[in-house]
Length: 337
Image (cartoon, rainbow, N blue to C red; front, side, top):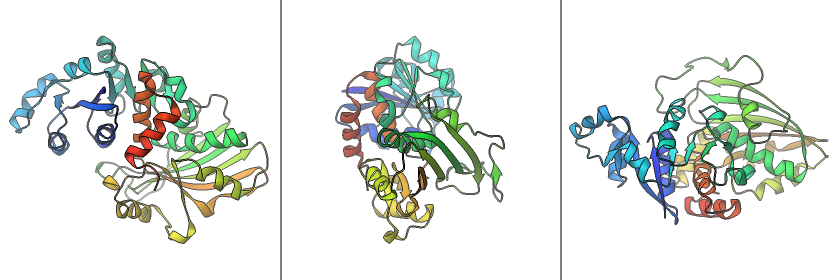
């Protein structure tokens, strides 16, 4: 069993821990937190060994009535692989720690690409991460774009991608984020960082991205225009996407007209935390004009990278191939509504 350390137990870390705990070939060696809070208490309640990420704050856990198993250095030393889910920029600072204990590490998309040997998306470049020392699981938006682009490239060839990303202002728990009553070009320059990030997965891809932030918390929304290398019928694209486990087609009959109903659907379906691990593509939005393909997709920023982290653990440790890992991850997590 792979012993997986999770450094950071917030929005992404707690979801990764739950997903790892469902895998037949992995155990959660422990989770590290910088301070005691409700998430630290949840980790203890779930039986995850709790470690202090900062030695000077270790006593604060005991004062809060939380028993810790040790310091993060001990956790990293004992683990086969560490998943760093700390806030953006902290992962790069932690790299020295992981190298000190010769423990391969995964980072999240908030880190710069040069923190790792390879940027990772399971559907697109699983093999590139095999036995690497440092792997970066790309961001929620880049994950969503890559999942669509990969099958299109294989089936039809892709000449150019143009994407407008309407991004949520903050996660539900990020009370300090915004905007509150505004629509912001973010960034106002073109391209947004998402295009170059997708190119870390597909180096030869021609892609332009624009971004904006809106006063919402539930999901991102993508408007995509993909110019293919051959003309294709929209129904053929729907059939292609239907064969992809991490692309969820939303049929018109379900009357889901936005992210609010999507989240309600996830909750009604029994998804933990109302998570949507798949790209949520409005089936009726898939349309073609000659070689141009258009669609809308919703991306749940809190959860779509979780299956990718699980697959990246197998890739970095060389314990499975892409097909085998994705099949196991999807089955154990329940990916595919």
